[in-house]
Amino acid sequence: MTEKPAPRTTNSGAGDQPYVVAADIGTTSTKTLIIDRNGQVLASHSIEYPLFTPAPGRAEQDPEQIFNAVVDGIGEVVRKLSLMPEQILCVSFSSAMHSLIAVDERLTPLTQCITWADNRAAQYAEELRRSGLGQQIYSRTGTPIHPMSPLTKLMWFKDHEPELTQRTYKFIGIKDYVFAKLFGEYVIDYSLASATGLFNLEKLDWDEEALQLAGVTPKQLSTLVPTTHRVQGMSAEYAARTGLAVDTPFIVGASDGVLANLGVGAFEPGVVAVTIGTSGAVRAVVNKPQTDPEGKLFCYALTEDFWVVGGPINNGGIVFRWVRDQIATAEAEEARRLGLDPYDHLTAIASEVSAGSDGLLFLPLLSGERAPYWNANARGVYFGLSLSHQKKHMIRAALEGVMFSIQAVANSLEGMMGPAKVIRASGGFARSEFWRQMMTDMLGTPVIVPDSIESSGIGAALLGLLAMGEIEDLSLAHEWIGVGKAHEVNESDYRTYRQLTSIYTNVYHQLKDQFDAITAFQSQQRNPQS
Image (cartoon, rainbow, N blue to C red):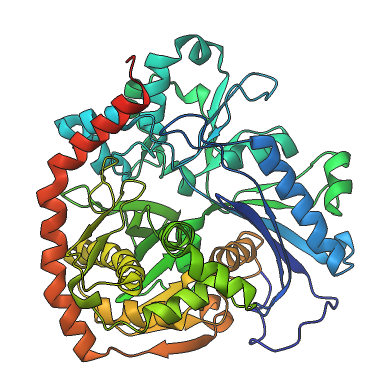
């Protein structure tokens, strides 16, 4: 065990100290960082890849494209700093959750990488959720019953693709695939396993009843390992592509959600992390597994005494993109002509409207919803629209709708954990002072934005140092994470949002049956022969 790192400095040059490479495998891109012992991000590189939607409800990606993004991303950041292989202490991983790939014995994918956004198993999730068995499995696994879950996806495959299921050697996630390609080992960390719906939180092992329901055996899944598990010995081909030594340690790492909490310093009582990117999440840390009696919240692992409880929303920044592309197309194009960022221009327009959008509410459920409703059939709704409302009201109401969704999850989390004292914000929305203040006023809690929004990558680097014995615990996060902008609650706007919250919630519940009806109608229109 070495001494703890020196306090954070502003030196950003590459010296003789060892560096950690953090690879963050996301839904839309893989971002790779090089981070020094003081928590400084010295280099970064992002490689995007497409999401394929070959049929309604499907959301898939090419696993080989993602693998190449990981390997080439590592190589790019190493070359940017002209680092020698011996200067890299380790490579540590963060990864999106809930992915599923069927592979044969030669590691050839038999399916695409099926992502968390894939809803093909919606019927299975609904039937399981309505049964007592669903709540029992949730209480042991910590993964809410939803089509995002590999459990329900496997149930779908068992019935709809029986021949493919029989030919499958392993069902794995995207990070399992990367490690199997690099090292020939099938491993899955406790963190990602705890997001499959197949992992018993207390036993730290696969749950027998969940596996029976999914129709798989432990041999068809990857080997369970701690998040600090170390693998070495990649092939010379991949070592050359990455610019690393063959024996460079690779730390298996954890899920992006739990690492985001670590990376923003939200792991003490009363401190809650909110992340909004394409989707969003609200999360807090507990020291042992804890599930919600109503099944609304997840519980995912990082280490034996670091568990993250919270809930994800489907509709975060993707709603703002929809507004840009479908409602405010002329305004977005005007911004481009003026050399402005379209999102900045649209938030400026939204800021012309007071909190509450003059009584216009938007349920931003454009791609169904996860927490706290776990309803894949939910749909977007403007409510309260009148002749007096203008486009600027519609823009602001859409942004407020995302925050109402965040608030709904935060309220569920408060019921389990007690009220939050402070929110630590990260993700793309954290760049916008307007959105940050809106969230502050919606939640009625001060919001702090760390210096770096690369929270999952920072968390992965810290976990790498722990795995390599460079630090004794994860408290170094407090030295690494500087505090940027802080927001205080505007009491007047807070009262406005409090008044509208019950209306927003009631609109959802009164439309729940109609969401099912319109979803059935849409399905019939798309598939008239079925």
